[in-house]
Image (tube, rainbow over all chains, first blue to last red; front, side, top):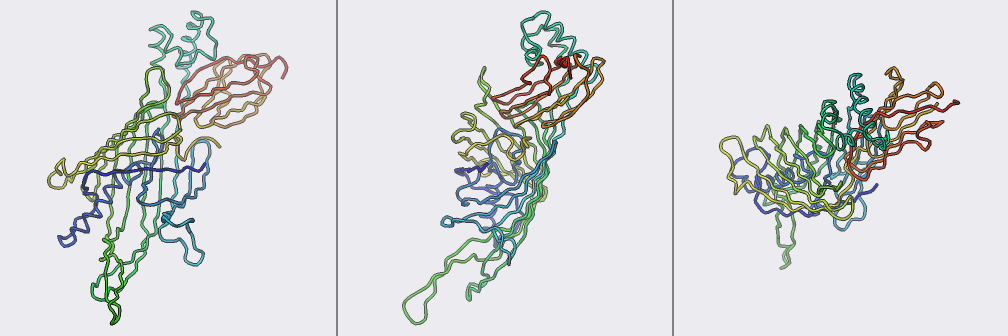
Amino acid sequence: MKKQLLAIVLTTASFSGFSQERSAAEKEMLEKRESQVKAANFTPNGNGAFSNVISNLSLSSELEKGVKGNAELKAGGKSWNGGLSLEQNIGKTATKATIFDFRKGLTPGTTIALNIQYMNWNPEYTAAERRAFNDVKAEFRRNNPAVSDLTADRNYMMENGTEKQKLILKKISNRNPVFYNLSVAFNKAKFSYATDSVSLKKKEETHFTPNVGFTVGFPFSVKNYLAFSYHFSKTYESADEMEFSRKFGTTNNTFSQTLSFGSPEYSRDHKVTAEYRQSFNNKGDTEPILAIAPAVTYGIESEKVAFTLPLYFIKGKTKGLQGGVNFGYLTSVKNKWTSFQEGFGAQFIISAPFEMFKQFSSKK
Amino acid sequence: MQITTSADNGYLRVYLYDSDGVKLLSFADNDTANVVLQPNTTYQLEYHYWSSNPARYTIKANPPFIEYTEGITFDLAAAAESENIINVTTPLYL
C-alpha cells in the first residue's frame, strides 16, 4: 500500500552533532554539517532512530528535503519478513525519479536498502502451566456457567476471576515475542564543488556510503517495548553553496554561478541506542491517544550523547495526520557536557500515521 | 481432518493436544495441516495471539469441530494479546 508521509519539522535551537572534530578554519562549514547531522538524529527517521519495528508511531520524512520516490519489494515467511527498497529524492519540479540508469548504474541520490526482521515467539505453555490453566478455568466456569469456553480466556479470567485464580494465572508466564531487525543501506551521492576561488574549476566526486543497523526489541506487552540498537554510518556532507558573479567578456554583463566551496566533509560513527516506547489510552478505550518514545543514543567515535523524548498525540486509528513534539538534548561527553541552552532542541512533528508494523506484518 | 489458521496483521500460535496432554500439532500464523483424529473425541486447542495493531485471526477445521461449526474468529479493533485453552470435539463421522 502506498503511503504518503508528510512532516513539518521546526527546529528551535542551533545544533551540534555526531561528527569528527575539525580545524578552526572549517568551523563554519562544520557547524552547518553538524546541524544537519544532529537534525537527522533528532528526527523520527534519523540515523539515531529505530526503524519502526513495533510501534504505534509513524516515521516521517522532511518536506525540506523534497519528496521521496520509493519502490519496495517485500517477502515474508512464518517468522521473518524482509524488504528491498530503492529510494530517491525527487526535486520540486520533477515528476519522476530515475533510480537506475542501465548505462551508469545506480543514479546519484539513490539509496538502496535491505531490511530483514526475524520474530522469535514460542508462547506454548509447559505441561504444568497447562494443568494450572485448565484447573483455574474449570473452577472459573463452575462459578460462571454462562461464560463460554471461548470467552473465558486469560484476559477475561484476569478481570473477572477470584483473587486466588488471578494469582495462579499471574504465575503462568505470558511470553512476548522478541524482534530482531537488520538493515543495510547504501547511498550514492554525487558532489560538485570548487576549491579554487580564482578559476572556480568544478570538481566532481561520487561516493557510496553505507548505513548498517541492528536492533533487538523486547515487548513487555502490545503497548510498550524496550529496544537496543547499533548503527554504523558513513556520510559525506557538501560544503556551503556560494554564489559567484563574474564579468562576461568586455561587456557590463555578469554571469553568476552557484558552487559548493570546499570538498565534501566525511564523517562516520558507530552509535548505540536504547529506546523505550509506550502508548497510552483513556480508561475504557482501546485506541491509544498518546505515545512516548524516550531514547538515548551514544556516538562512539564522535563521543556525543543524544537524549530524545518524542511525544505523539494520536487521534483515531489510521485517519488524518498525527501530531507530536520531540524534545532533545545533544551533548559532547569528551571533555565537558554541552550547556542545556546550546544542546537543547525541540521539533514539532506532523505526520501521516500508518500501520504499526511498517514493513513487517505477518500477513502473507 | 484439515485445520487451517490465519493471522492478518498479527501473530498467532496454536497447539493441538489430545486428552492425555500429548501435543499433536503446532500452527504458526498462516498455516494448514492435515491430521488423523478420532471421531467424536474431545481435544484441546491452546492458542495465543499478539498484535500491536488491529488484527484478525481465524482457526478453522474441516470438517468443523462440533462446538465451532463456523470456525473461530477473533476480529480485534485495537492492539491485543490473549491466550486460552479450549475444548474442541471432532464430529461423529470423519
